[in-house]
Length: 402
Image 1 (spheres, one colour):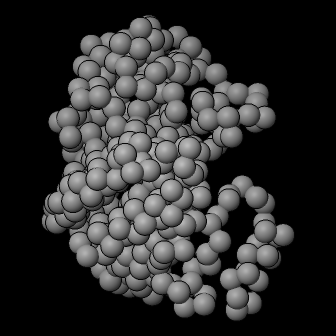
Image 2 (cartoon, rainbow, N blue to C red):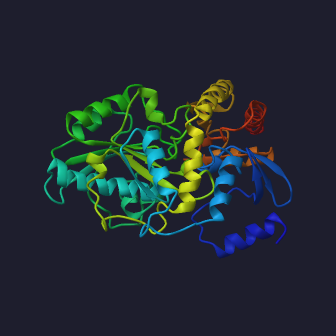
Image 3 (cartoon, rainbow, N blue to C red):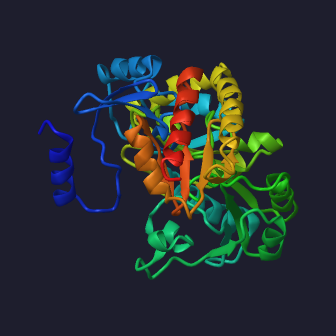
């Protein structure tokens, strides 16, 4: 198969339709640019939903992966390996936590945090057996496992997958008062995205995370921050919680931790929380494998320089300034932080998908969500020139519908 149309035809016939991709077939990629099978080049403004914060084929990450591929890729956790200690120490130091528990995908990390919070609730807080509840937010996105979709308010993710897992209380995102009212004697955790990505890059009101932190401390409840999309440099800080000076009890990490090379996820917490897990109670054959740890170690080393956080903050300010100029010209609202934005298209003008396709025709790849929103998340390594070019193409794509 040499043509995009051939690849798309076979893919549509032979794969489950759990995604609705834009009609582009990518063959290779470097930095912020991707090339399709016909040789057309595009700027990647999605970055694998923040998995590619450091760009496609980042030389430092690729070098680490290639070196490890020559030596050792998998042992399972039945044995130690020589990349594991550095990973645990490095990620623990980056998060300021005592311990980490590695997995593979973001959803697995969220599931791990849920299990740890429940066990902590029973063994440490003293919640009555099987009575633990976790407070979650409307419009959340933490993955698509059966437990996670049980507390999703997105009909596509939730409908027809019951019976649903009990033990969750759903409250309004952005309202600390709603969290306060939901906490009871059986509450073990509050699970929150510092910025809701899938919902359209929703940034909560100033002080929201601080108030949640205070409530969790007051009521002896774990604050769990899902930083899978918002963390590791995306918002101009290592973690989005840092914008309010907040430190959660559990960090949930993934996506960019694998450098766009392998799936790597983890939770990080102090010993009094993660210490409740004993041998045989949780794990994964591939979780914390040598290849994953080697790649993640390179990512952690890059983040320790602060270079990427500073770059995301600086370029993010430029991007948001330019996007703000589109408000009233086919754009209703722009939200976000750092190199991350949700652009609400005037629904009377076009859908988010229609604008995304028009943008693709102009050499920029982005993705819609919730009908009228286009999400933008370019790699942090993008040049200023390419960043501004892409925003200009977005303006032109929107203008084409007027």
